[in-house]
Amino acid sequence: MTGVAIVGCGNISQQYLTNLTAMPDLRVVACADLEVDRARAVAKEYGVPVAGDVSHVVNHPDVEIVVNLTVPVAHASVAMEAIGAGRHVYNEKPLTLDPASGRELLAAAGRAGVRVGCAPDTFLGAGLQTVARALAAGEIGRPLSAITLLQGPGPERWHPSPEFFFKPGAGPLFDMGPYYLTALAVLLGPVTRVAANGSRAHARRTIGAGPLAGTVFDVEVLTHVSALLEFAGGQRATSVFSFDSPLARGDFLELTGTEATLAAPNPNNFTGPVRLRRTGAPDWTDLPVTGTTAGRGIGVLEMARAMAAGRPHRASGELALHVVEVMTAILQSADEARFVDVTSTFAPPEVWEDHPAD
Image (cartoon, helix red, strand yellow):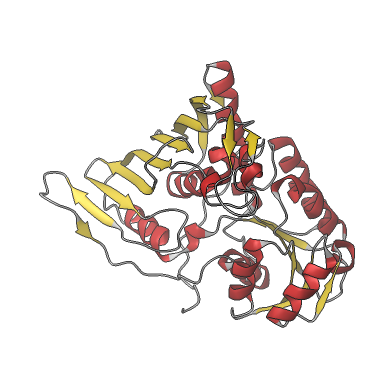
């Protein structure tokens, strides 16, 4: 059993803890938070034996992997502390807020001989793994292009404290973009350059729910981003990330090849319909969807199994760093009105066949 610690006991930790405490090969041994009382309450709720502050937990002798669920601005510092203690790290997305800190993090892990993994791990779920198998089998011929679309009115309407969604390191690109860009990278390979533009529909927004309803706050990021992506394999993709649309849509990811178009499920989910439409066909055909639907944290399990087997893990730090560089290049392109090169790369993860049964 691989010992796991949760650092950051906010809302997302409940999804992780529900799943990780039920997965084979893992044992959640500790929880940490800046508010130690919250860590203790969460540990008690999920039957985790140890709770405390970050330093205490990352240095606990039973901890092998630190699952870093802190806010994005703390991802780099908490991960570096864990690496300094000789622990493997699995970060929530994004890996860090900029490529320089991401490269520093991976370099430190290399020197320490530990691994770095990172969400999103949704590409390990049944939906996108079915898509990956279809591409590998040549179902669409040679992949040529892709389209993704994420749009909605913004989280301030329902989230009780949404200000952080509209600060640097968030917005629709950094908050939701990792799901779509990771899926594209896994399916099509590394991005080599991008072009983009962006806008901000409102300089200020109003909280619509919870005890702070009616509070007005400043918007500090682009809330609509359109990006063109070029891949090392020659494919092209068009992606939209928006908090400025009255119409909410998130389950649009299509890949077009020389022989057919493949409609993938929402990359923020672990399963969903996968449909194929061949050239000249009158309608879509549903493909059988197979694989795990275990949910958030499955990347931690796959990483632990890879450690035990001595092979690379799939939700890798290199993949996550590449996505951070792509997002940073998108923002730079939108600001400078020019193509921006992306220099990082990664080893494309293999299709995951030995996943756990649900």
